[in-house]
Length: 161
Image 1 (tube, rainbow, N blue to C red):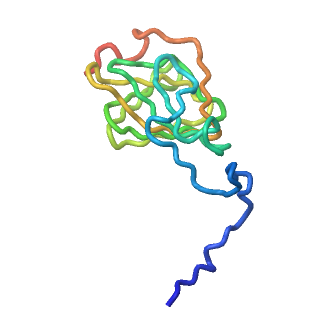
Image 2: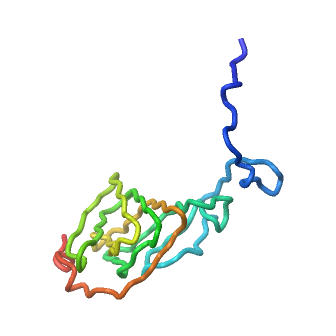
Image 3: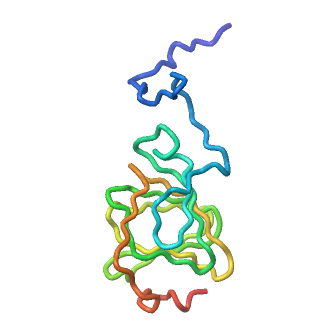
């Protein structure tokens, strides 16, 4: 008996995603061919796998962010973008709030949501191991750098373990 595939019909118009060949299809970015042409927040290595730079995506940025041991970003926010993150390996801290007094710590397997326009500082808690996370933003990888804060002003940063 043949399966009934009639219920799997396109609802809506996705023709804006047509490839040069004329078809609408998934677009694969092969490992090592990601775009490194991304916004910077002071030393984070960001590569995009899904973005307007090399796929038909128009409302999504999805990439991998790597931070060296002891890294911390400059103070920044992501404009109108909602940001989601997932810690692949390592230990992270995000400072936020009034004068960046508050923070949340994360480790491998943790997820985080950062609201639009929220000033923050992203950190690798380890002094010896890299931190790698997956990050997604809508609509794009917006990075707005702000006046920075000294390490001594970040609560518990200098004496972290």
